[in-house]
Image 1 (cartoon, rainbow, N blue to C red):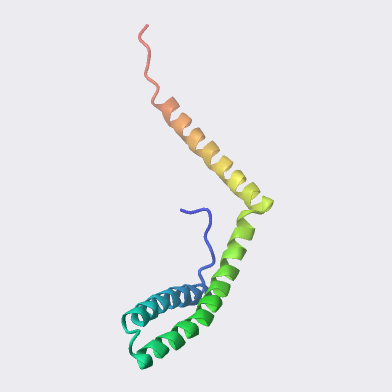
Image 2 (image 1 turned 180 degrees about the vertical axis):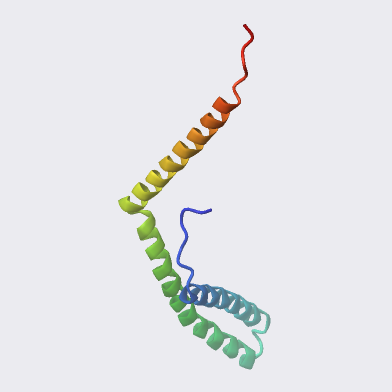
Length: 112
């Protein structure tokens, strides 16, 4: 289980989709621009598509950034550390107590 669990909302997934889609689309258009440089129709089409992929990248970064900022802000707060330390200490205490009680019941008898 991870300590940082960002709120994976639909906005977050949409942002990831937009960023990845923009990166893929930008890469494909750069390759087509270089391979079909002599054909003006394909060259200008790839330039236009490349330019249109940038706004999608920025919107995706904003959507991802909001969710990530909220999770990092929560992670960096003192209250978060205090809650986790308290929960961890209780867990260790109860596990140790259970383990010691279990060993005490199985204590071997000494021969006199």
